[in-house]
Length: 249
Length: 322
Image (cartoon, rainbow over all chains, first blue to last red; front, side, top):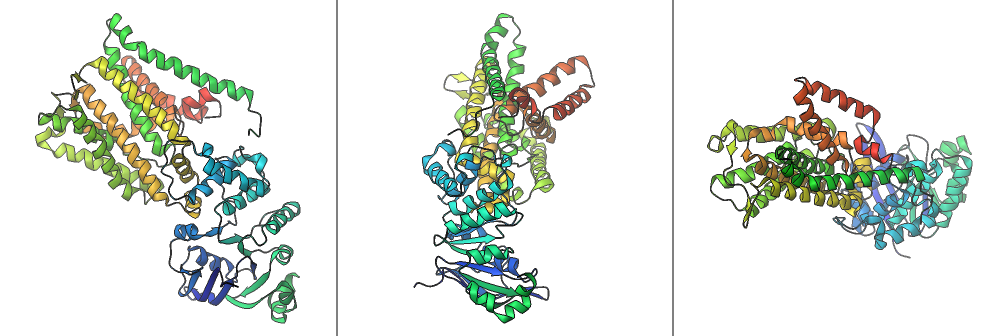
C-alpha cells in the first residue's frame, strides 16, 4: 500500500492565545473517506482552512502526496489536486449550470487566454462537463441558469464542479448543511457512488451521514485529535462518547 | 440539447433587437451620401463623434460590464490615443500606422501599469485609483508647455495611410464605423469565449474563481489592457476628427460620460454601450439647442432609464435576455 495522499505533522495554529489546532497528525489514505467530527469550536474549520491555504499554520507541516504545501497559495494547491466544496453554496448563479462546470474543467486545462471560440461549444470542455453533470444527476439541467434551480440541485452542482477538476483529494465541508431529509439522502447516495474514486476528507455534523459514509473517523476536541478509527471503533470509544457522541448519539 | 423550450415571447423580442440593429447599421452606412446630397456635412462629423464614443463605450464595457471593474479613468486611454497622433505629428511624422501603433501600445502599457496597481483593490478604492491615474495624466498634459500645455496641441498632419488621410471626413467616418462593427463583433466573441467566461465568473464571485484555481488578477489585468488599448484607438480617432489634442480629452468628465453611456445603453450587454453612446450624445446635442439647462434634463432621462430599464436601452429592446 502506498503512503498517504495528504498528511499533516505537528500542526499548530494559534489565534492570539487560543490554540485552534494542537499538534495535529492526520493521514488521508488513497481512496478512503476520512471523516472529521467534533463539537462546535473544536477547530474543524481552522484545520480545513490550513489544508486549503486560507490560514497558514503557526508550526508543523502539510504534504499533498510528496509535495510540501504548508505555505503554498490556494490556487496553486487546487491545481495540484486539492478539490473542495463550500459550506454555503457558492456556484456562479448568473451563469448556466453547464458554464459553471465548464469553468471548473477549464481551470485545470492550463490557461484560459482563448478569446474567440465560444467555450460551451469547445468539445474538450463540453464533453467532460456534461459527463460530470450526468454523474451527479443534473444532465437534464445543463442549460438552465443556476439561479433558477433548487437548493438541492445547487449542492449537486457544487459537487459537480469539485469533481470536474478531478481532484486527488476531495475536501467536503458540511455537504449536507441546510438540506432536508430527502435531499440529504440523495447527497449520501451520491457520495456513496463516489466510494473508492476519490480520497475524501468529510467534515459533517449529520452523524447518520458520517457513519454511513466514512471508512475512518477522527474526532477533534479543543484542537486535538483524541481518537482515530473505524466507525465501529469510534462508536465504542469511551473518551469519545464522554466528550462528544454522548450528547448527540 | 435544449432542456427547456425557448420562451416564444423572448425570442420575438430578441429578434426585434437584431432587426433594429441591422436597420440602424444600414442607416449609418447611408448617412454620408445622404448628408452630401442634402448639403449638411455637419451630420457626418456629429455622427463620427458618436461612433468614436461608441468605440470607447464598448471598450469600457469590457471591464465594467463583463468583468465588474468600475473604471472611472478611461479618459486616460483616450487622452493617450489623442496625443499619440498629436505628438508624432508635431515632429512631422504623419504616418498613420505609427500613430495607431503608438496609441495601442502606449494605452495598453498604461493600462498594464495602472491596472497592476488598481486591480489589487475593489469597489470604491478601485474607482478612486483609476480616477487618480487619469487625473495624473491630465495634469501631465497641462504641464507639457512645449506640446501646448492647457491650450492643447493643434494637429496639422492628420494620420495618413498611403495616399489616404483621415482628414477627409467621409473616409474617417467609414473607418470609424468599420472599427466599431469589428469591435462589437469582437466583444461578442470575447463574451462567449473561455476568457470571457472567466471574466464574467470574476465579476459574479471572484473568490469562487480563485477557489477553482484561477489567478484572477492576471485575467482581469489582460481584460483591462485590451479595454485600454481599444479606448486608445478611440482617442486616436477623436484627435483625427478634431485635428486637435487637448488635456480636456483626458478630463474626468469624459470618464464619467463614458460610464453614463455604458449604463444608459445596458451594462454587460454587447450592443448596449454603442446605443448608450448614441443616445447620450444625441440627447446632449438636441437639448443644447433648446435649453442652457440641458445637463439637468439629461439627468432626468438617465434616472428614468435607470428606473424603467434594468438592462438599459438594449434591455428594453431585448426583454430580459441578452
